[in-house]
Length: 142
Image 1 (tube, rainbow, N blue to C red):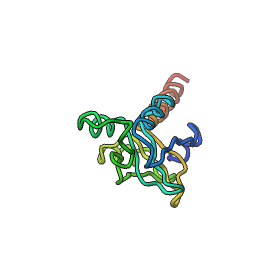
Image 2 (cartoon, rainbow, N blue to C red):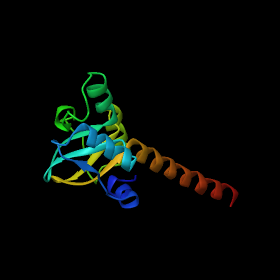
Image 3 (cartoon, rainbow, N blue to C red):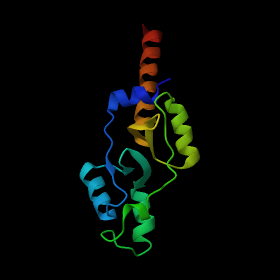
């Protein structure tokens, strides 16, 4: 079973963050610039939330707020679902499905060490399955 640690070793541990006092406009501009779907909200070294495109759509656009005047803290999710490096990708997939989230910040102790998305998990699981299929085909034809 592939672990979160192994996935982060492959994809890298770069995490894009924003401060809770930043504007939603700045957050959305950063997600567009980096071509990502979420930002981890950090106050210094402390994980305080997460903001996604979904938060923007539901809490700014639909509520007639303006993104330049709305701070991230007003729309971010404060109850952040996290992953640990030792967890399997299957455990994370189940957690994402159960909690209906698409991004899991990865914490080692209290330190943020990466982030994984549903896309990362699907890509890795498909890669593992392709490897197994290739091995079975080699065995059968070999």
